[in-house]
Length: 620
Image (cartoon, rainbow, N blue to C red; front, side, top):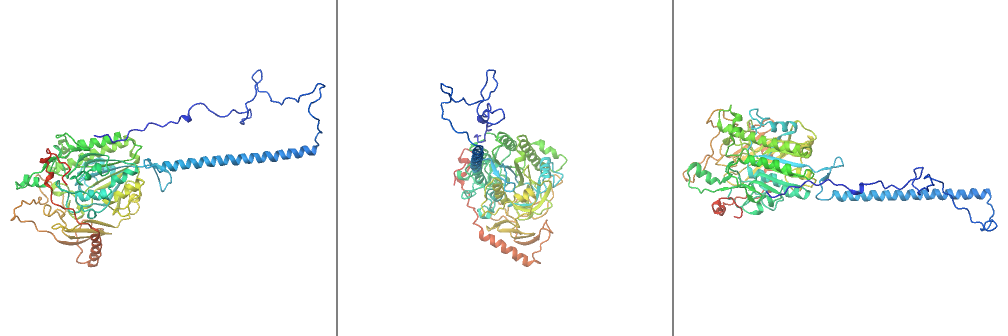
């Protein structure tokens, strides 16, 4: 790994403050004055003026003068007193002016230091005093279900997550886009995905595009504020050219993979066309390549479970970091995304479950929990925890076909129902003023960008969709947000959109964002209890056969009151036509702000077979 971490700065000592006391000598009464004369025995003796010189006859050589009268003596003494008083006043004024000048110089120096972009201090607007810029650690789980943490389901063994959430703040109404790439683009840009062109499905491996480079993404906004930025894990925002890569978007280090998923042991990634061929024997090309990077170099390890390596790297980065300098760490976990596999010791934690796939999935979540525990323990050991904002959330809801569950919410990953975009979220760390409660304020993935920039001492771009949520997060003040757009996609056959305004939610068009592959995840699903039990229809994989029958494409108009019906059982569209029209007007406003989705055909020049079996950049 290229060495990017800061080193511990040596303690600063000023030699001007060392050595002997250099005060001026003092007279016997403690006043600063001339050095007293010493007698033969070393004692101080009084100093007297020499007598006037006399002449030969003993008379004084100087002219005689009349002895002054008593009145003259008094006048002379009065004048002497006035002069001494004026002299003392002048000295006092001079001393005061010198002190005032010194204070002004000191304040100017402090202001100059405070304006240094590399300074690790930021002024607190509320307290008026300086405090260190906070460390920000953001952990993003991949396809973690609402029902898949211990504080929502006691079946799950997640002691670190549960403890951090209990000691921090659980956010009960935090939303994101229901798929990987749209969700990550919202985090990194502070904008809804339909404003960056990332709203349609997800980036596939051969996609000749990425999150457009005209957007200043989160780490690039933090860097001028003095932050060192680390990405560990999944990127999934473009890799066909170098401009899209993490190190060219503001990160100082990158250790992970560029595509949408990775084999946990051999660290390869297979394009979806290869998956189709493998499962169905269809006539599709296989595009399979190695995808594990340490900055710009390929990691030569094809056997170690990748989350062991990612978790250890996170601990190492924290260990080597100079805590006096602010750090942003984005730990983008592959867990528990498909294909589900985990070391046996984690699966065995759930030996009482009869369904093996659910045992494996749960074991993946428990491994992520262990990694989080190691990270937070190291932050505490390094003395960084009290100045850290630690955030945990999922990039979208769980996928029931891959044994991630969201009960009692409706739907799942890649749907516009609540289970697609309402995700497990909590914050912890020493910066929170109020802790140990559940916050019901409305929040969206886009909000982290301006919140982090503001917390770091910057000024967020007012054109962002995200809002600064720090007062809500840290103090339980009301959320400034009243509206969430789940997604807007105009490409058939997935054309669909959803919006929430206040307590009301509207879905129109196709609620399945990955149709027809995911085509019927509209129910309420509990984990299977029996071996080989399935709870949803399997993925529908097109074979290329023109006679293949596709599942019916949904076309809906749903209205829900989420305050009264958070699980979306009761469609009110037929009875609340005015409310439908109101939300449609808001949705149409956002449509007017949308840009066309980026969805060009794949570029087969990126085939890893052409580059020694490694997914490489440079094909767009």
